[in-house]
Image 1 (cartoon, helix red, strand yellow):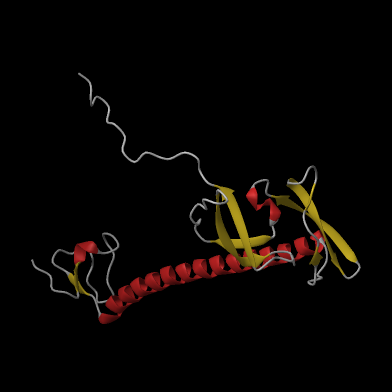
Image 2 (cartoon, one colour):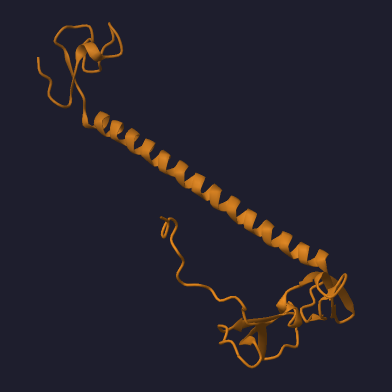
Length: 197
């Protein structure tokens, strides 16, 4: 027997012998119990409540995540401030001296800084190559090497000051020279195996 929507067959009740308020016993064959609209809306409201509960759980989880992230960010900022206090003071007008190498005239060293009545030392490094005469605190942008001068036997290029670190006194333009290469590179090389009899 086909059942239309809104009707429930009698055998699908709570159990044999149970009765419906309409007077039809669940055990009676052919007894059909009407499902009123309140039962259908109740089932729909349960589904909506479950969906809403799921959405609220997701929102709660996202809110908890946001609070954890906010707390972590605040803690990181606090640690940064504490580290600045441990490293020295809140003085911002530091005057730094030149980098002084530990031995010889280049390599690792230190620089001293002063601010009001405070002082501290920082590690630094002076390059041991041709940049040594400028120091590590003067940063230059160099152009390409010029041609080799036949009279002097050197190449020259200039550098324009890009940045001066630690209040360094730097020249605006510097010139660098290096000896011309004595080797003449051959553009054409014999291929392997060619010229053999």
